Image (cartoon, rainbow, N blue to C red; front, top):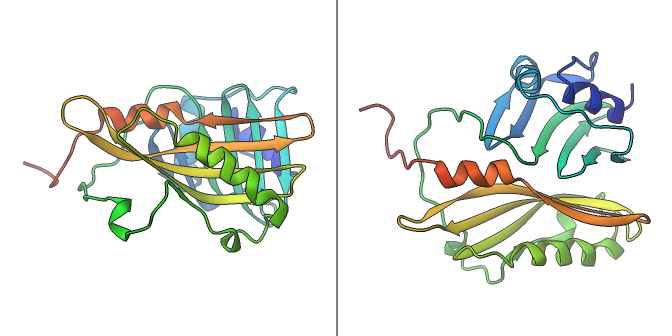
Length: 215
């Protein structure tokens, strides 16, 4: 079974044979899910119908499907799904109870709003780096007080490829909210585009600061 077929099956809430590793991890709707059972339950509760007209790109180690403003991006081990990101709109998922930890990327003293080292992405050809940076820079044009874009996955060449970003934002009215939400850019001979994880952004906006667990 190809990774593209497996992703479509999984999106519908169907078990894709043995393609989903039992140790897989999913980030979706502003929440995280660990293990085969939890991931299947997430898609069964909120399935996606990725039609025949969806954009599909496959490369060694990666696969993603885009349908409108919804996308699934998979990191592969061979033909097996090891990690998965779901981007699009929807109600934020229920987050696990956790202690909030203060974080500010600027404390690293790095300058610039895009954090990208091409050498960290061996599946990305050198002639595609400009595409990755251009899409990341466009994501920094945001009304948030502070926006920083981290390129966490990228593959392809100047003609066809994709990049996955973790976008940190600090902003909001009243008490400031901060956190990460995903974004994805892709380019093909037929066109290119960018998708922001609106559900993930909504999850950050409603997240409550929890300095401790319990009363």
